[in-house]
Length: 178
Image (cartoon, rainbow, N blue to C red; front, side, top):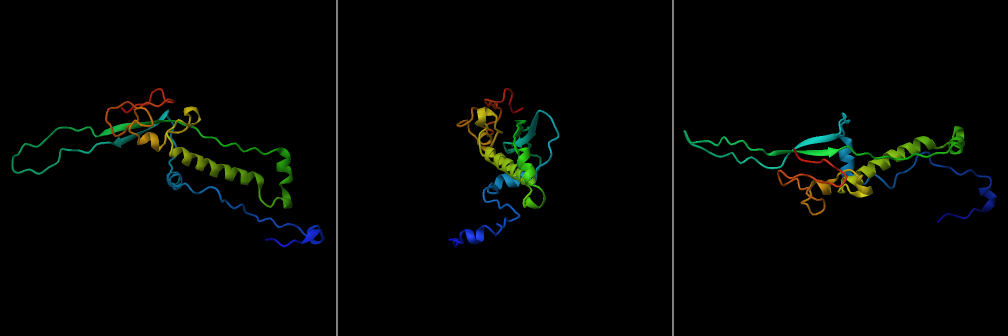
């Protein structure tokens, strides 16, 4: 508990502000941090298409001499299509707030700190949406793990484990495995 010093000393003594902001809120989403650490810049296009192996080959086995070997071609891959989604984060600082936070009085750079916090918060929001089904914010959220691994319980016909199924999502007019 702080010691009461009264006005005698507090009116003449400056408060010392630490020159670093401590983050005690974010950095808890391990999956998002791992995905973003190895992120590759998007090269454009209307969607991200990922070939996915959904089945295993069954044309394996032992043989002897001139046994007949299977030459059946097996289609074990499908294409997962993820349409482009957007995230935003607003940084709002008034002119007077920026003006008073400069020179020797600016212990922490207000603009830099707000931009840094917003970037962290956007990473956290990305991580939150990774665990979702894409239906949040009127179906504008990114498609997450619930949609990707669903058996049609949470997201209509989104089961990747079932070959040749059309993928449907309320916010995606044309989302299909090809």
